[in-house]
Length: 413
Image 1 (cartoon, helix red, strand yellow):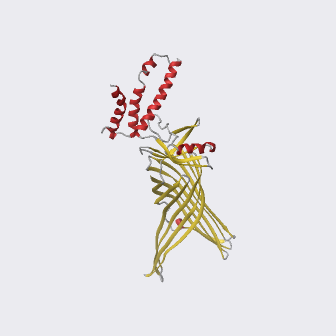
Image 2 (cartoon, helix red, strand yellow):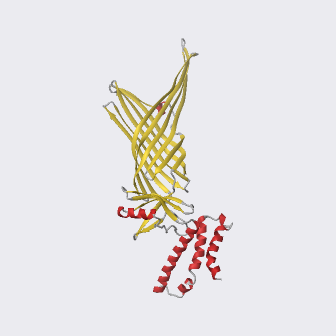
Image 3 (cartoon, helix red, strand yellow):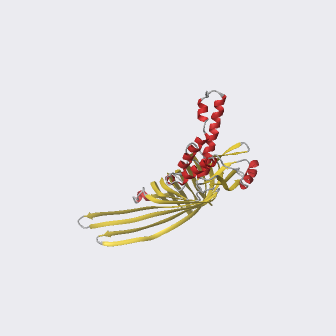
């Protein structure tokens, strides 16, 4: 009988985990079921004793505190049974921010989370040594009735350190669209105070509102270093035709003309990003890279006067302008899984009073991560370019403004 009582608890737990019914139950529910069972074992006789005491008595308060301790123990035992014990791996300390970066995994491989948390320098070295020796245990990994590995607390040398955890993804891909609401391209020339300005969208009645595909990829090769790349294309075109007839006693003219014009812009961006400051909710980074604009334009025109046809065209003209840019980025976790992001890339040039210009590309987004692999996001993107050049006393200039909404799905791994 004694042997059966000793084996009873492990056998019940094992049967719960191996039964076909439990195979359809989530790990979180398994933890909840095991916790309830373990609590019944630990609470034996406690409920009756609590009912016999008055809430104001010291005995009642002490027993209530004991109940809370037993509840925590039961939850941790259930988690260790289902998930295995959590442990630190690949833990690296950054002296500049006094932050630990690394990963928490379970001994059964059920979960993996990237982590970061603050710890003063005077404690960090001893702490890391204990982690490497396996003398640090993570216990607080349960929040209410739901597993929430974003809310882990670590007690070390009498101080509780909250550990911020994120999904351990090194690569993410954003696939979506860019819904352009504003697109204005102006070219001007001026000499001796006299000149002209041409707005391509207005002059040629080009489409101003377009929807285009947009791709963004991020590769994070260490906790504080990553590479970002993106591409999208803006295509504008117009088709105009006109005709008129002029007649009098001596003249009879029938004329018509047609103009087909296209103006395409490919935007490529490649940035190296360094995370200079990072806490559990806030990250500030600095970035440097290339903003490459490739412009492709051409036209096909024809006219007919009294059945005399003439046509001419310009083959595709391609201009590529790679600009070195620098910028900053800010990310803030509003609530778990919901991130506010702001980035701006900037470029400026001024040379010998003959060439000057500036470019800025700013993006504001909100990202929501459903789980480790899938998320959704959207926001606003605006790109402004201004360039002026003077050649032989003639001033040339380009102004290009593009702004619109972006929306995308996030795929991470």
